[in-house]
Image (tube, rainbow, N blue to C red; front, side):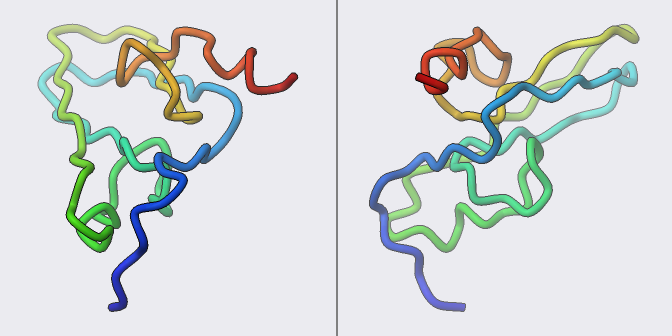
Length: 90
């Protein structure tokens, strides 16, 4: 597979958060580059970006709960949404 240029990344995948109902003990891999075909989760596309500047963020929950995961990739609290997407809608 061809390398992806490391320009204008992370890409805004979707300009709204994704609701996740967590499963206790399950490990989730959140996409940080915005190129995954399985947003908001990682599909390892970041491994094809020149220099590999991105990594997935692994998260595990102790209990069942609902959380909002960032999909715009601009959050200051990855992998969780901090409403940064609202500034992007201009």
